[in-house]
Image 1 (cartoon, rainbow, N blue to C red):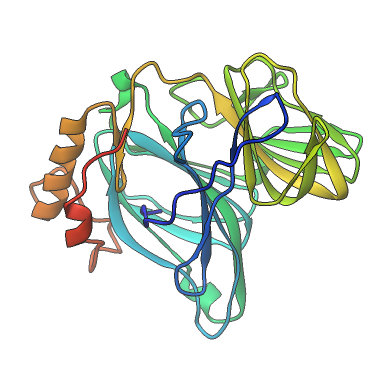
Image 2 (image 1 turned 90 degrees about the vertical axis):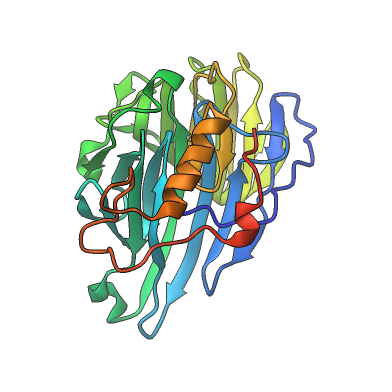
Length: 319
C-alpha cells in the first residue's frame, strides 16, 4: 500500500514497567475506508525490522465500492499483506497477478525497486463486500537493500499453527515457539496472528531482541494494565511478558525480531539506509520513464500511477 500521510500516532506512556513504548494510532478516513497507522511513530520508528504498520478497516463497501491503490513504487523494503476479511487483487512490475484472501500472506520484496497496485476485484465489486487486515513494511538489511525484487504468496494451510487451550497462533513470518514460516526472510523476524479466548494468557516469544504486540480486537491485560483494540505495546528487551485476554477475548498481532544495525530513512514509499538512494528513487519515479528507467508499471495495470504531489516533493527523508 502507498504511504498516505496521516496524523502521527500518540505515545502517551504506560504504568507497566515492562512496556517501553505505548502507541495509540490515530484513525484517518480515506473515503469510506479507515486506516490506523502505528509505525512509524514519534517515539518509535521500528520494532525489529518492522518500519510500517497499518490497520486497514474494518470497512464495508456497498454499490460497486472497494479500494483502488494505483501503481506506486517501493525500494529497500518488503511489504506484508495479511487479511482478516475481504480480498485484494495484487499486480506488480515483476509480472505477478495474485488474489489474496483471509489467512494467506503476500510477501513482496522491493529490493532495488518494484511497482505494484492493490485493488478490489471486479467480481467482488459486484456485491456487498468487507475489508479488514494489516499491512506492514519490513526494512531489508543494508546488504540486501539492492537485491532483485521478488514475490511470494502462501496459502493459509501452509502457515504453521500453534495451539493451546483457548489459544491459536498462526505464524505468518519468521520463527517462534519452535515453528518456522515458509516465507523467505532476509533477517531475524517473527510475526504471529494470535486469537485468545476470554481470560487466556499468551507468552510473548523471549528469544528475540525487539518485541511488540498490536491489539486488533478485544482487549488484553499486561501487568495489571488493560489495553483495548487499537493499541501497540513495545516491550523492554529481555523481560518475560505474558498477555491475558479480556472478558470478550482478544486478537493480536505479535511482531519483532533483531534490531537493524544501521539507521533507516523513510520517505513516501521508500526505505533506505542512505538518504541519497531515496533521492535517486524519487527522481527516477518523477521521470516516469517506464521503458528505460528503473521502474516499470505492472502488466495489466499500466494506465495510471500515483504521482509525487508537490507538497510531498518539498519534504525530505526522515530517520
